[in-house]
Image (cartoon, rainbow, N blue to C red; front, top):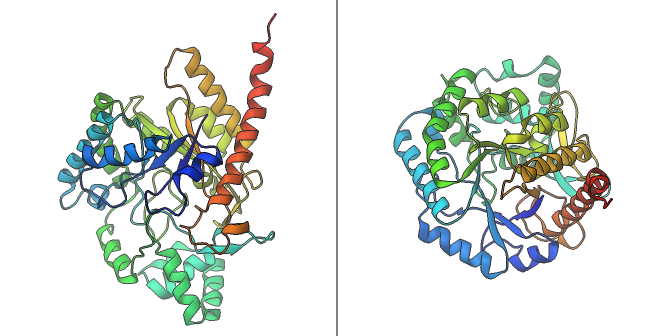
Amino acid sequence: MEHTWRWFGPHDPVGLNEIRQAGARGIVTALHHIPAGEVWSTEEIMQRKNMIEKAGLQWRVVESVPVHGDIKKQTGDYTRYIENFKRTIKNLGDCGISTLCYNFIPMLDWTRTDISWMSPDSTVGSRFDMKAFAAFDLFILKRPGAKSSYSDKILDEAEQYYNRLDEEGKKKLTDTVLLRLPGTEEKYEVEDIREMLKGYAHIDRNTMKAHLFYFLREIIPVAEQSKVKMAIHADDPPFSLFGLPRIVSTKQDALDIIHAVDSEYNGLTICSGSYGAGHFNDLAEMTRELAHRIHFVHLRNVKRDTEGNFYEDHHLDGDIDLYRVIRELLLEEQRRKNSGLQNWQIPMRPDHGHKMLDDINKTFYPGYSLIGRLKALAELRGLELGVKRCLFDEQNKNP
């Protein structure tokens, strides 16, 4: 696989030289300063690309070009925003960037209830606790009809949890749930969420899927012409929050997406942590069946239960069998190489990482500290090498 690293641009506390030292050769980044829905000009793209290449690295994947909320709801200026998205795809292709990761998650990009969770070994990671989320939904957001989203058990636990919170605890929970896109420390306000929810009041799962498929029919022909592979990211977590439909959460969702527009440029980002937070997903089996359309991979691990609770574990621990996932990815790479594809390597990045050692008292975007990801990349590269030797050494031996 091609080893890459997420970099949030010139203001990222992790520098490009440190990324090279960590062992990555490809960069995954975005132009976070450009608002959702606006066009990325070739000038802006090339400025960032030249900065990366000057450091001896390559801009390998865009993550992400945000899909404007009007596109997801098909309201307001959605047709203009789709045209702008097409222009951005074309400009990226003109600049030689060939993989674009994006998501179609309603409202929030990702959701956790604790981003400073102390693990048993004193490293710091993130966690999603269903009763804590329900407490926010029921008693802070006060969403109409929220009770119907939870079991009686969770409703009881959420009320007890909320009653134990002091004002500081309520603020911390609110700030964590409403944290915005990676790459920014901005947060939504509770009133923002209440207002945004009104726009989704009449959008169910089937409608949301129809909106995504319409978007794909519009953009994939441009992606084909521009030689830019589109790679949709999973919902994080892979189940409904705030009563909103989530449509990139299971193997069947992924199959529906790639069948909606049958093109090699309509593909997937396999995020082992996002799909893996759902106990109903078998990541190795998903990887095997979807391999032909996997254009980008995030590798991380989670420990989960059947009620929606999970925490981010160390990469070689947790409930996801990354050995089997990597094995399926390497087999797919071999298939692509044998079929004569030039760009047969699949870009992979270590996703998230515990805050640890000298990084503990430094400020990073949650999950994106230096040392935790360095450790993760080293472990994943070692695992990949071991799997590769087991798979291919025998067939490559000289007679």
